[in-house]
Figure (tube, rainbow, N blue to C red):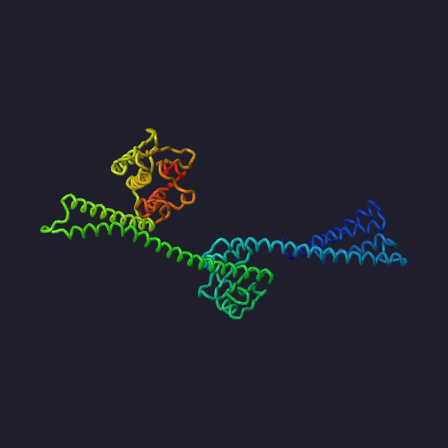
Length: 486
């Protein structure tokens, strides 16, 4: 129904209401003056509540005429006899008009309260949307669309003083010209054009103008526009502050990581280099004319040089592999394969470190195959089993088990490596998988760079699995990792 049709229909319904009340009260029920006056007043209130003040005043006038014609003597004429009837006539007219005005005022107040409540709800929902991103550029691209979606405008645009771009809700400009946005930023004063359905609001942070917001297609109240502008300004400043804080934190962590890396690498590289340097120096001091070392001693020094060179090579290899994993530059050749042969290959490679440790393996024959890169998973097993041997006392057993877990979706295969070492403190269990971190009580006793478990974690997670540990001080640890079944 159009606005004009609704306007006219209100008058028609008011007239029909008077006719209906008159017909019932005069022809059928034969009601007295007082009852009819109350009936007319109820009709006036109903029309005022449903249609508005104009229709209710119109009904008041025609109801007064009907009341005079049908219920005030002399009946059947518009003549009023007696002062009491005149008083009744004017009292009814004034009461009807006053009741119409009061009802219309209450209706406007109720509508205004509903609109304010809706504005608050939309502002709250809008504020929640503004918290969805901490990236200033991403947030600025989203804000105009959020304004359109939350407040039913046709289009919106946002301009920030520190950026040259204008962020829009869509390709259409809809009167939100860049020049108008810039002028609003410079002047710092709002501009509302109700005729063109345009509004430009400065984005203020206190006395400082940080940008401008333009809205087209629906002129919201000034209070609502100011609230939207304040929320946008706060959210943009918040995102910028979070970004700066993140950069500062990243720089701090990078500096800390660089320090830890230099400390770790310097310490670990210095030990084999010192041994190599001492052995080479000792060998250089021995000549054919003045031999210093026996053939056995020379062989021992050469063995030290060879072992420490291998250690240096391993350290450099681990650092390079960790860098490649962090950069996602490692390619995995994933295939469906049984885990048993991979465990056997890892044990064959570790015959010397496991010489003093009995190894017990429990691999069910009916285990499903796992989806994995067998070479990479063997690398994980070698490192975990070698760690179990390093940190366990001589003759302490090492147990390797595997099981399929059906409660996970999708199904996974879990491999466990249990040792009888000193255990890991609860605080350190989440730290041992970090790069360059080594146990506080094992840093001197066992050599290493602290990169091995970090490499294992990266490999397992690249397979879609999870690496973890459960440990009890004085009773040993169980390192486990899961792989998808395929």
